[in-house]
Image (cartoon, rainbow, N blue to C red):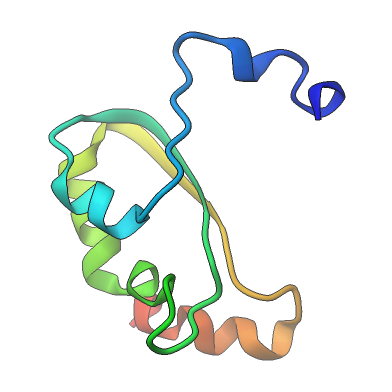
Length: 92
């Protein structure tokens, strides 16, 4: 969708990683200014489940971000009924 990304995908500073986000973030030694994640719904035993844990967000914020860095995530279903339960473990 070139009309949507307006050329940003061609910027040499951008790295798009398609794969196991949990494994990548837990194993990387890199530090990032910005991490943008588009993750799967937190279906128990599904591929995105571990990305909704407090431990994951603590690890990413303390080990993977440069000072002042940002983590942005697009996640879970669009309905408000499931949103609260999806984020309960992170919030608590």
